[in-house]
Image (cartoon, rainbow over all chains, first blue to last red; front, side, top):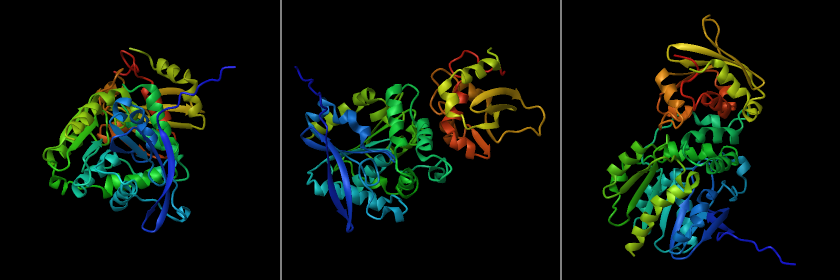
Length: 286
Length: 127
């Protein structure tokens, strides 16, 4: 009797322990491909599944080793021991520490780093402070200055279902043109976040992560900066992205028509048509 | 022009939408320019929509925008900033007042009720 063959995806997922400030964090990481390391950072309140289409894109993985990890408290990465006694709040300092600790643990040389939303913000910080280390940064829906438009307390209270409200809030950030399948997959990730985690992430995204007073100091001749934002993003709007780009001399910014805040997960094929040329341009400089 | 009845039918024939609002029994106020409409909801069903004439009648909360803004919201493919109530909120196109707890507890339901008037040539029968 013939056995069915399983058509596995190219993604390999593993766990390891990362020590930061004497605290152990069990981290889940997925990767695919070989070549220049390309680290992908997920959005606030979600996890690395957002990048599955990039991990499975052979046009990218032929040249890049794509690495996607879940931040502590997110996806399949655990919160630290004793988390039940802590209020989760992502600070700029801790976020940068996690990323750099991860990169050093992996002994990555001259990686490219791409992040979306809060990931898109932090990569701009890294372009300033770690410009010799990173080959290039790609900020998706990233800005150096943002303004909150709702009260974060709604995200973490017992009389409001956290998963439902998170999905209902971020559904406003998905373009109406995005395929239904991927819209709902993107929202599903938000429905699965731990209590208070999205709120804790937005502390960095909306408050602690502003650095429009320093972004002009980024030297793009050392570390190139690319910015991509969706037309329908009502959080990091096209205007916010272009204002950020105007402060970062030499940065390259584009607005993706007909997409929102989650280009890689809400409309992967459209996103690929924008990200391939950027990744090819980075390769040409090698 | 489509009658209000059609909007009500559109909501109530969407079993998934009604089921998602099954815990809801309230009235909310829908501000359409300088007019207010009361939406009466029972067990997730939209029982009626009627123009607010008696000023002491009010909903638990009120969602308001100018008429031309709602018309953009209801286009088949709405333009950016008009495609979702919270996108409109971010742009200060919509205002939300009152007791927001039931709204936030059932946010996608209320978004979908209002968006149910989408994809029609003329909406709601409101001028």
